[in-house]
Length: 184
Length: 427
Image 1 (tube, rainbow over the protein chains, first blue to last red):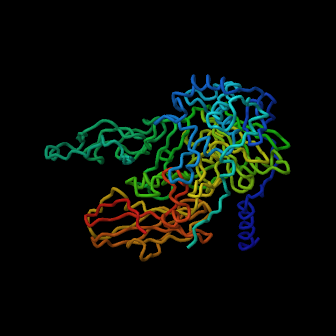
Image 2: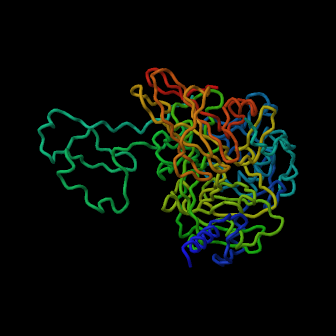
Image 3: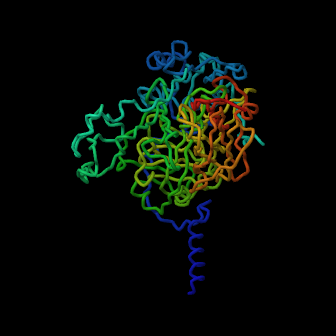
């Protein structure tokens, strides 16, 4: 092969190896590494989209939730869910403030889906003992927050069926990304 | 309200050069005011003349080197109430080239830094796939790998600076930005392996920290250039950066680059997690909030001279800084020394790579009169870095908690006639 041809072949190879990886271009598998997880392993995971898929069995109401909140949440979030400086955020209030120039973003005023409350509390709360609440406790404290936020009635039972149906005040408060939004 | 990003605790004093040392023997040790080495360094005696005594023995460091005991820059933790849910910032004023030392890479943690044994760590891939999989770290390392240099920037970078200049140094104003070489498996390879089902549109990425952090990522990005990274700057990823496994989404806001990655769930809908609804959304004055604002748009900043520095005298200085864009390559950087009245082309230093910080340089003869320095970046899409005012005109100034993310406006540094440099807003 002439030098030029060699260079061309080399250049082509380099190109082939560095070409766009979009949609797995350049993929030479299947390699077959890894193994198949068991049903039990996957059962430990959860993430709850707005339609409630994956919500576990169990339920809770305002009274039960008040007990959970008083025992495990009040220190950081305050006796009226007003938040505690240097600790937890306000959970309720702020409705009508989003256009005020001093917006208060809370579950009540800002969060578009009630399912997010369940998912996040189960995932990361309380801060000093994340993942320690039972599913019933999470349903209950979610109910308590939503009642105090005047979003559901005090006698409501929150479970896998009812939670996705809760209509949050700021449900339609979000828009897609329009950027670039500044043009020279 | 906002303290000053401090320099490292100034325990280090200059060497004492006293007349008494003048007649000391060649092997004399210069006494030092302190025996405490800065973080990442070890303290050693300093000989009067290093050419007259044998130096330190190889291997005395146990086989892993440390930086010089004379180098003191450190990350600065933003004073949040807890140290577990907090962030620390890179000292960009000291940066050279474009790579951030791994020990100075900015941090943002929501529940501290987990300690994870890589031999027990697993990545699960499930949901809308034909082949549900779990991978050990050894499994992942068997796949063909790539290495790519990318910046990561927190979308909260500069959140203190919307209305008025608040923090004093470039570490405070821009320090949630770092650049590394990341090594790992293209996520597209894994998606091919598991055979994504028709109708899938999103992937939930989940971390194994105490926040069990989750973000929903559009599937197109995962196919495009996402990386499952286990390497950073030639070694294993640092614990603060997601050891042993991190999702890298080039050019997207830092929070989406899930650290301590343990799970990918393929889905037809986004999960509307706490981070992508109540946080990392951009509330405008009309009460509507932009959601899924992933891309970090073109931005630049002069790192020398910058806030809190002092130019010793009039004369020649090389202005230098960093420019970057989440949309690709930095095409051009302009520098102004008169507050944006006139602009001149800066030189771009190699490497110039897509979705990577690019260092720019500009020669400047300071005449000793007050000046305002600015830099402006243009990326390969033709997007021109805007002024802060242009951004505020579009997004509003909805108080301190409105649109706080994605500030990519032009930074101004004012040089006073005494050479001192301060953070200002100037349009």
